[in-house]
Image 1: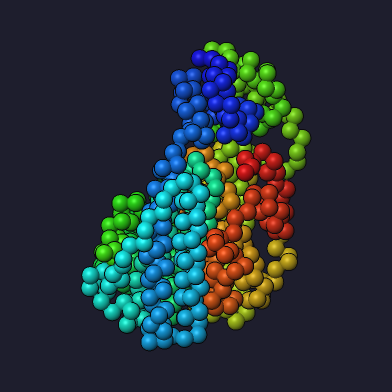
Image 2: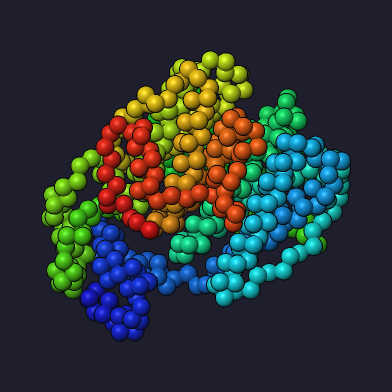
Length: 277
Length: 223
């Protein structure tokens, strides 16, 4: 195998190859970082991975992820918009209305940021769906009962966190989009934490923490269980977390709380489908 | 999975391509890189390069957070409520898990245990403890958000992603304990709805306030 020839051939075909890979030195550095351990047979694979960074992910895939995210942000933004229109009949004035307004403004900003990003990539943003926040009657009093409203809000936020996490790996070859998606992801996690604290204040006797314990819904029940399935993982990348490092106080409770788990696009779409007309 | 090629910068392109052109390219390439190892004269604990470097960087930050919360729980501030004790104990455990997890994941290439200096924090005072906790949690979120693009391996990216949101949940709680409603205020979320992200250089400069052991992040990948 002649790596020099491969690089030179690529240079002829694509003069911008080094911009894609930062520089020729960067290309070789990146190649060398695959290191001395791998067997020669694995070289084509290593080269493939290196060039995938430059060429692999088509813009179409990235736009598809962004449109998926946009749909979720439309859902959240419209949800908080409609809730706030109910005024104090639904959400207590003061801190609660302030917090929901902050969250609503972020969701609207996410919608705008995602639309602009899709356009800048030459894609077409999907249109906003029409929503039914009662989910065909499953949450019939979502805009008249503060408890139900917060329960649905918690589910949307926790699901949003898991949805972005599940798409991050698809974006690995687009640094700018990956970073922005994760910057949205952590904002959703801040929201989730706060909504959970609001629910705890309203339900002092129920176990509701800012983080997700095992695959518990925080007292909401089976209607939202799909948003929490898979969160009780206590083994990460082959590492057993219970009792890790000789810490006998680390049980499956803390082990599950310390990591949030991803959901696939299909899992997320199944969860939000009842809310979309 | 990923190996250290510390001093690759010192290998000339021509020499490198010469090696690479050989049929046994990779193996020789590896040893060529090792030969120049001693040319790196930077002091301190070297985090390494590639994904290992980023994971060691995360490991260093989790060591810092775990050490901080361990001291918080060992010397509870005056007037602490039962709810606050429970929250801070949970967070301590999460950070210990993260620390021990990275140590296990990185294996032999893991950096040593770091030493810390928390003399600027008054652990007997709620205000001082929560202010430091807020800074550490927000710093952690920004560090992971900024480092994600430097990761090459999808599995490592996913693991970092699983931890970022837990740190963000911590940050939102601590902020609310200080002042309810500040869980995602404009000091951390911009007009585009994006959380803060920081480069490793920026994070290490800030974290340096508390880290006594000298850390060398010179070989980390850069954006």
